[in-house]
Image 1: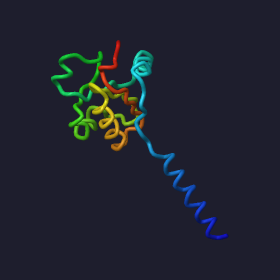
Image 2: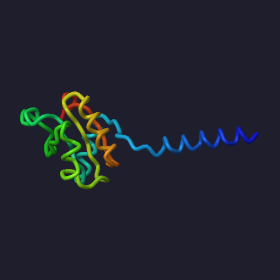
Image 3: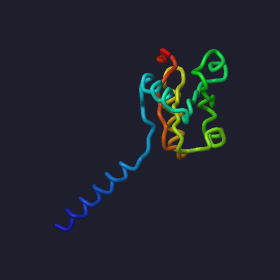
Image 4: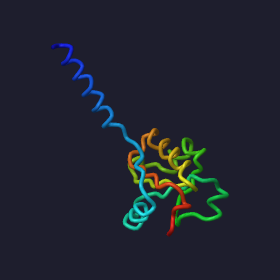
Length: 120
């Protein structure tokens, strides 16, 4: 009987640990647009290259290429609790960049994929 109690306690601790893991939230372009229109205190983060950004980007987006997230985010994105909406061209780099941000302590990160899906 004692063994059963220990195993149950161990499982419940693992479940609580999983609940405390912060991850980037995946949202649609439509959800991102609603958030952008309704909140002046968020950052739209473009993680493409400078060249891609120059070809066209979402209005007021901040550029930090995905390869520079770890080094530039602490100074460009000083508030780790601010809402950050991340995008790239197709969604692959935004997912990786969003994960890097979360792993660095950012708590309110949303990945809305690629600008190719941005009809606005």
